[in-house]
Length: 103
Image (tube, rainbow, N blue to C red; front, side, top):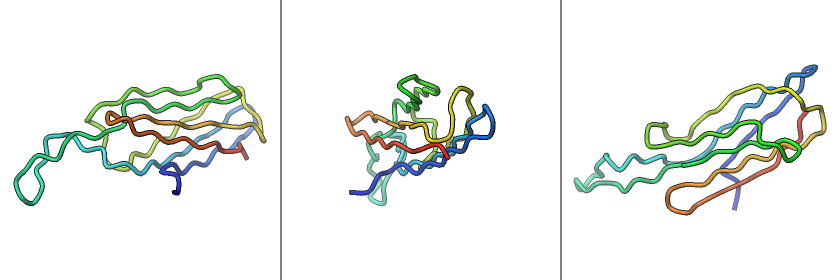
């Protein structure tokens, strides 16, 4: 199975810029399918980025985030070659994680 997470992390001096695209339906539970039945809620509840074992970005989400979310942020304290671990868990018990090397 391929990862649902695509990430690019680049270091420029003491600033690391992270861009992430996550494949996830992010269903709100308020939308109906073609038969007029509600599609059950299915969304990422927590997204976490950790560098060298320390959390650098944590997001607690609900149903207001769109399908296939894109996240971009910067942080200090990392260098080229460090590992950046990205993980998420959703409201149905699903999860995924990946580790990227900072370029």
